[in-house]
Amino acid sequence: MPITSSPEFPAIGDPAFNSKAFAWASALPAFGSAVDAAGATVAASEASAVSAAQVAQLARVAAVGASNYRGEWSTLSGAINIPASVSYNGAIYVLKASTAAVQTIVPTNATFWVSVNEFKRLPIFSAAAAVATAASNLEGIFNGLSFSVGTAGATRLSVANNLFMASGDTAGSTIGTSVDGRTWTLRTMTASLPWRISADGNSCLARAGASTTINTSTNSTTWTAAGALGAAASAAANPCGIGGVWLVYTATTNVQRSINFGASWVAMVLPASVGTNGGFFKVNGKFWYWSSGTSAYWSDTGETGSWTLTTLPVTPNGIAQSGDGSLAFAASGTGSQFYRSLTHQSYEAVVGAVTGTTGTSLHLVNGVYVSASATFGASFTVHSGVPTVRVSTNIATASSVSLGSLSALPGAAGFVVAIDPAISPTGTFV
Image (cartoon, rainbow, N blue to C red; front, side, top):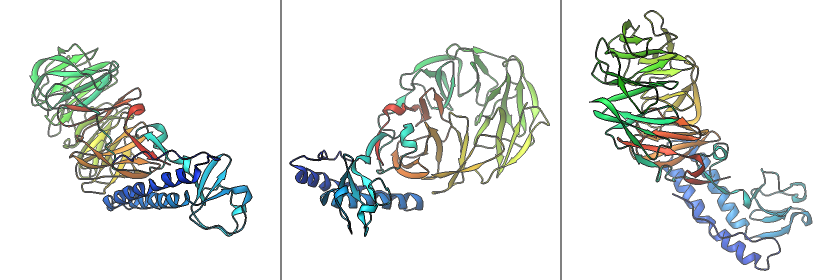
């Protein structure tokens, strides 16, 4: 829920200072109420609830304090109690905590004072917002940012040749490409099949689910048939290419491997079957896949016997990769902790990042983590390590990608959420 802009705060010396300050202060209780409501909404998240309560208290103090102006701070001494506000170096400061000796507490002391100028509107996915403290929540973070690809079921994203690429698990004879994630151009494939794409530099390989058909491209726009797989590809697993080596999962512990851009394929054996959470990922220059429980595996080459076991901290309920190459996952259930990996074999908890509902995935957008739900409703953004509840449209549990400063997230089937941090929806921050 966006916060309504407050009336202009008067300048020092304005003859109508008191009346304008009162009008400004009168607008703040609604702000406090909105944050209080948000705190109740995220009661399942202790960190978010505490943050909302602190901001609400700050808003209430500011609301009353601004209308109890005591004059220039340098002229005051002795005890001063809240509510109160003073002038200092051309700005207005509101007292947050009473003191017995106001002359010893300079208004720049953030323990006792807050500047009315510190509340600011920032794009939620901006670098400045990533390190700020959120003072509003319940904004619709993807409002106006969901765009149709024009091809069925496009929820799988990749990047190559300075283009976003979108494909999906619904059979279709086209995939989409876009320079900005907003306007999409359809590209023709060699057959109407469910395509998933992997990029290795500017080389792109698409496998068709439940089929032996492979397409390749060196420009993301023109696709041609490559060599057929020795067995049908799994319909639920991503292909992966690293350094000219390509892997396509087929079934049980079987994988097809190519070292000539899909011209021919050789069967390899995995140490355990590939689980349902996405297939192969490229992490820190390694092939990586989750199998079951807390067991995952990585390899430099994808060859039989080359895989090493790595143990996850939880059993993942969905795995998503962000544009920086990091993997993120959480256990099932509301309020579950998210974990992240950039190293293919070590995993760390992401401070403040928890699931909003079952089916939530975590994405890193310009330094801001967003925990987005697969169903319409509550999601979180994380600012300075504190989760803030937001409202989002549907986000599929699949990987997001980045192209320069732009990010693309998999939306509802056939749609992509395109985020330009400079023009993303705004929130109030301190």
